[in-house]
Length: 144
Image (cartoon, rainbow, N blue to C red; front, side, top):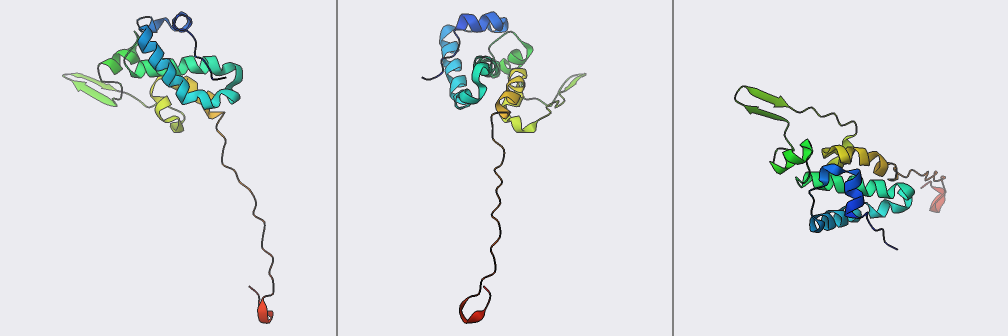
C-alpha cells in the first residue's frame, strides 16, 4: 500500500510557520515530497512520517511559502545568494553544509535535517573481489 502523507492540520500543528499554506498547495507539495522519498519507506520505517514532513517543509520553503526567513527569501528570489551588496550594506552567506552530497536537500534547514535520514538509506559502493585468473597453458604450451 503506498505511503500517505500526513494531513495538512497535522503538518501545521508541528510546523506552524506554514499555517498560510492552502489545501491545494499542501496537496501538491506533499504529493511531490512523497514522490521524492517514497522509495526510502522500507528503510525509514517509523521515521517515514517525520521524513515526509521535513521534505514537505523543504519544498514549501523553496516555493516561498511560510513565515520563516528562508521562505521569505525564496519568495523574494534571494534564497541562493552567496553575497549581496546594497549601498553600504553587505551580506555574505557562508556555506555551513557539512555534506555536499546532499544536493538540493542542502538548500534549506529542513532539507539538511532530512538529508542524514536519507543518506543512511542509500547503499554505498558495492565492492567485490573478482579473484585472480590462474595462468593456464594454451595451445602449443604457451601461457595466455
